[in-house]
Length: 103
Image (cartoon, rainbow, N blue to C red; front, top):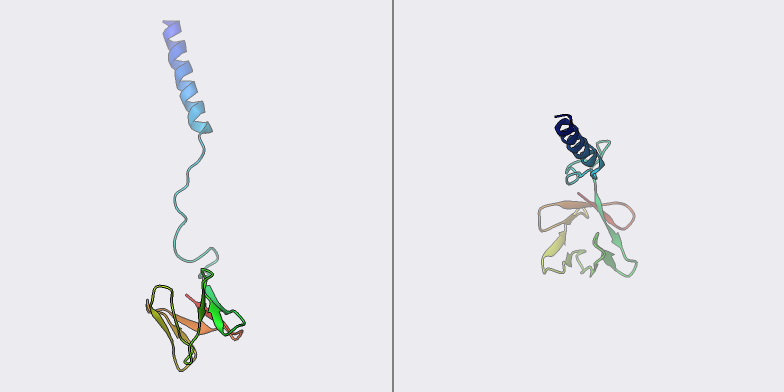
């Protein structure tokens, strides 16, 4: 009888130890504002050659009105205040450094 309790105890202890040594798994990072309450933004910057560099690294050439065509064929229009109106409805405002800040 003692042997049965010993074996059951050893198996239970091995299970506890194995459970404690497993790497912790974390879910996907939370969406929304970054820690500290700031919202993550993206920048469109001037490439210095009359075009713009998009947040993903793609370079586009601006037209006479300041707008440009995205690689997917969608057109980004520049409004009277100088902001860029993206096809998804977002608005990128000038950053006073020749680029734009986007939500």
